[in-house]
Amino acid sequence: MIDLKAEIDTIQSLIGQADPDTRHQHEPDLRHMIERLRANDLAVPAPVKRLHQILLSEAIEAQFDNLPV
Image (cartoon, rainbow, N blue to C red; front, top):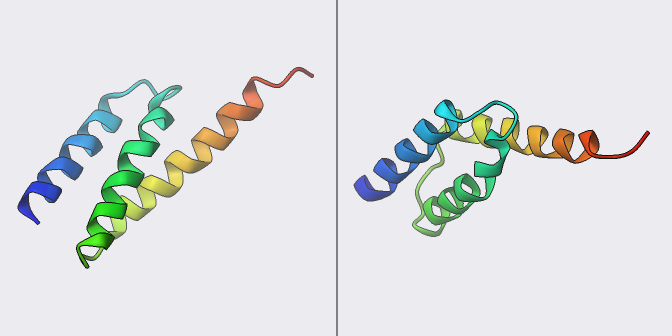
């Protein structure tokens, strides 16, 4: 658990420092860490779940930003 916690903290730090327009690109990394927690029967912290939802929303929004009008 300690290693997973440290890895999640690192990813959260990277996301916090990332450009707001591109930080959604870290979503797959965070999703992978969430999957690893669940695979080890560990609870996913609520802040991590919220951050993942935010990144998913940003990723969806970014897809629509590239559509021609």
